[in-house]
Image 1 (tube, helix red, strand yellow):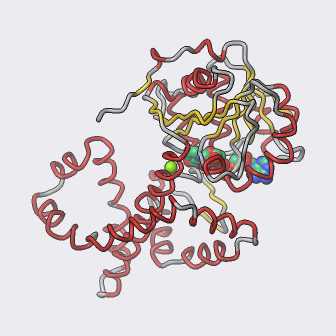
Image 2 (cartoon, rainbow, N blue to C red):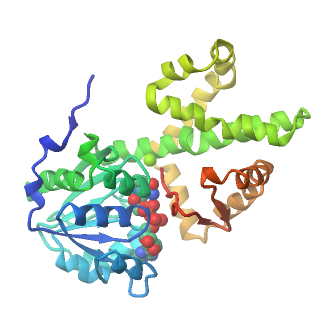
Length: 350
Ligand code: NAD
Ligand code: MG
């Protein structure tokens, strides 16, 4: 099966001509969407809370800023780019009371629609453009003339123009330069959560930590263990990114390739597949979402405990010292949840 991809030439940019887009939030995704759309010739209003620290940043970048309520009233299209856990409160207080028939309400991730935290009125169109990359890349790749790929979906389209407007949004954001793929809110939400839990964040972090601990416990130097299990991972991922598993295996030694075939499936074995299926089932039946919503509604004690527990892991201490001697890596020091880097916040979601 080959999925249909949509590129610039497949999309009518005119579907947003003369329209106003409200970008709610000016964080990782928000700044990139607002600036890319603005430079693509779309009228953009950034909607922010009255005392938002982002206001000055957005205004310095030449953007018009209003309160969320005023931005919603002035817009034809509203893109919600506050954190997923904050969306329901912002929607209930400032967005829904100001919606009118024919507007297009948009999301960059399906969580709140799919798990019915937000149920928009039947009179508005609901669409999604979910870039497959963090905000700083959505911005920098666009500035370089490219785009990051994205998924798009239409949840409801009472006006009959929601789909065309959603695609025009993806074009203005630069995504159709790379290709966008149609999905549903259910498929995007479930696969996004599974990807970040099984491989991108959860699986990778646990694999790296366990390999590092195994070497250190066996008496090897922690610095060497860091280079082997974390630093070199980038070199491998870069090969996968450019040419898949075949290019990685073409590039590494035959010894490394043989070890890949005989030891890889012993490390990541059928018991891992069984637990991946369990994790997927908990995403599909809503129990992961219910747990995460409950955690947010009750003060995030477990989340903060887990965060603190890993923050000072030995691999983090050793890695920070080694990276500080490699300024060409543009190393980032993260303390108490705040990242400091010239490149800006690396981006929250995956
Ligand atoms: P973010 O954490 O960067 O925050 C966005 C902005 O919302 C910030 O400027 C913050 O000041 C503002 N904000 C926070 N709480 C608020 C509140 N209560 N009221 C009003 N504003 C508030 O968010 P993000 O990572 O850009 O995520 C936005 C959306 O994009 C989410 O739906 C996310 O799933 C999706 N997404 C993110 C990425 C990514 O890599 N970051 C990738 C694809 C999709
Ligand atoms: Mg993701």
